[in-house]
Amino acid sequence: MKTMNCRQLGGACEKEFHANSFEEIAEMSKQHGMEMFKKNDEAHLKAMHEMQDLMQNPEAMQEWFESKKKEFESMPEK
Image (tube, rainbow, N blue to C red):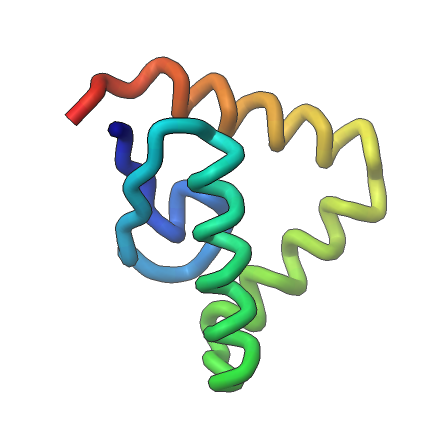
């Protein structure tokens, strides 16, 4: 099991997610983002806007995704 926080995954806080795969942790982050969107959390809305800007460039988005996946895979198991 590995741990990454919201900020490491492009978010705005230190909430930790624990998962065995990057896909799992990405889904947890996405769910957290949707919760924060519903709460109108300003910091998370700003982070989401920045991610939306990144998504406008598919190549840059893919590079970001791959770098986060590598970061996850290089982390020690806890």
